[in-house]
Length: 270
Ligand code: 2HA
Ligand code: ZN
Image (cartoon, rainbow, N blue to C red; front, side, top):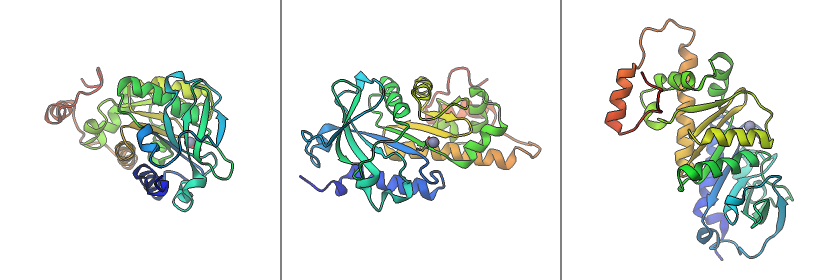
């Protein structure tokens, strides 16, 4: 068995949590990540027949039965993941019943997965229907996107259009736009269901006055998705109180669609 601390998926997870902390997106225990893994990759580093603990998830996700996930721990700080991955992360398989997590590695202080596991796993279910290659669900608290939910209309088309107008690359990076949930109580199955429903039509879901969820094929892509939206929100906050003289027009957006071979969300451009 190879040393799991050298596994590319683990190294990338450590780098990503460290980088997200450095960006100021994950104060204290803020944020959480789930990374879906293939059994063949996991089996190189842990004995998949040796279940350390069975942890109830509190909800049912039969379509994820048998799938493997590396997930940040509840109450754990992103800033500390690099110093003690085994304590701050856990690797588990969803049991055949779809309702329990079979821990194979990690949560070494007796801890468990993030309190936002419902939103993560339900989002994986939703994204896998759209793209079987989706591996990542990522949640964090980037300040500018969060701030924007206090002063901008929460209508999804309006919110998306504003972000698209803030940087030329936005429509190219997230042509599916940004979906928005009103403030809801976090850590519940209800917000998990609502997030997953929003994930069916976009890879970014804003939790108003809280943060954002992103989904993607790998950690790098998902990080980049959130990074791009957050940059756009930052520009919005720099200009929102100033008289607007110029913008990226819908005609320009259509040119971008053609040039980069992307299709903007139906009905979002005039
Ligand atoms: O885990 O970000 O939404 C801390 C959070 C909860
Ligand atoms: Zn949060």
